[in-house]
Amino acid sequence: MIPIGVVVSYIFVPVSDIWQHLVENTLPLLLTNTFWLALGVMLGTGVLGVSLAWVTAVYEFPGRRFFTWALLLPLAIPAYVTAFVALGLFDFTGPIQTALRDWLDSDLRWFPDIRSRMGVIIVMTLAFYPYVYLLARNAFISQGKRSLEVAQSLGFTRHAGFYKVALPMARPWIAGGIMLVLMETLADFGTVAVFNYDTFTTAIYKAWFSLFSLPAASQLASLLILIVFVIIVLEQHFRARMRFAETKKSQRADRIVLSGCRKWLVLFYILCVWFLAFLLPIMQLVNWSIDTVTSDFDAQRYFEFLRHSLSLSGLAALITCTVVTMIVYAARRFPGKAMQFAVRTATIGYALPGAVLAIGIFVPLAWLDGKLSDLAYAFLHIETGLLIQGTIIIMLLAYLVRFMAVSHYPINGAMQRVTPSIEEAAMGMGMHGWSMLSRVHLPILKSGIFTGATLVFVDVMKEMPITLMTRPFGWDTLAVRVFEMTSEGQWEQAALPAVTLVLAGLLPIVFFMRQTED
Image (cartoon, rainbow, N blue to C red):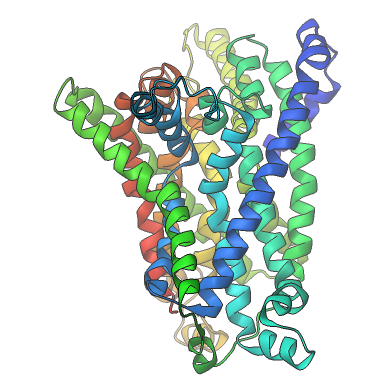
């Protein structure tokens, strides 16, 4: 709660000339851009996610088993990577328009401008639709054949039954997925930065690092927190309405077999989405990476970025999983409303945009850094310099706050496998405290901790705003390298770091697919 309190406290800071300028000239544009972006991405992901979930859950067609999990693969590609690939391919100087101009001998004035609001919406829709797809598909599968049977008993056709029965039953799940998409959209920094599309996250960055006004950046962040808080309340509301009814395996396997042109139309639709969202970006990234490696590849710098990313991700995963394990264990030993509130508070950081957390963590630690320096000089006559700001401590604490929720779910899930009878048997053998944790709980929690550490590791690898805004000098990572190169339009130089991030992003998807059955 400290980062939130720090940011919100700037609401009461006297208005500066910079803030007055932002309110009069920038804030209306930010609100307009954010509103239309959020609305467009919600509509796009809703249509794509629900339609793909319905056809893969209810119908049988060639390639269904493959595309059931392949449609999740776009989650492995950070949205800002999809963004710069789209610009590199479809911009005026890109290979698509260049080839069309040569082939058609035309200036292509009719070709849509990718550097537009619609371009950002399309890219984010392709990057975020799996959130809706996954939850909607779980809802449709949990219904089994019941929804279609109910629809037929009411006299509806299959088409009408989808809108009248199946869709209303799945609405809480779909709304929950759309709320997740909305939070990701508001928190996004890299994609809108690539498109030079001003939203709150880019405005916060510019206010801090271009206008050099941390108070103005904090005041913008406080407005974003208010918006996010409303979304969190709505997401919790929809989550509370979710109901999962387990269906028999035979019911789930008994799908409607499509025949004739229908199965090929469905397959073509899915292929188009998967090609644009995953296969095309991967192909172009690999192509650019090969060109880079065979020409002016700086291996030393690349491995330096890789080393920084791996070390930060490893440390963040270790610290986060250690803290979360202690929290889960404490919640088990001392249950109650106060502990439940503490756990919810500790895991709220994932809902906050990285740019907001960067400010919320940096401000108090920078103040503490200054006080320690003053005390060292006053009592020891030593000029310590920046004890905290010159290290990776701020980054690691920001990662901890943001990604505790990511590791809490698998670790807490593993803790539920420790039954009271196991603990009673351990106490009967004289185990208490640390001995029970190390000899009873930790062996059972091992798989959950490993899963949580993997998720945190990958998320930190891909994290851009926190790393960009709080890193000490010389601590550039793969994500920062992608930002720097795409800011200068050097798509080829950004490709190899991006491919590395995509490979890391595949890990949690592989784990997820191994733990689920169709």
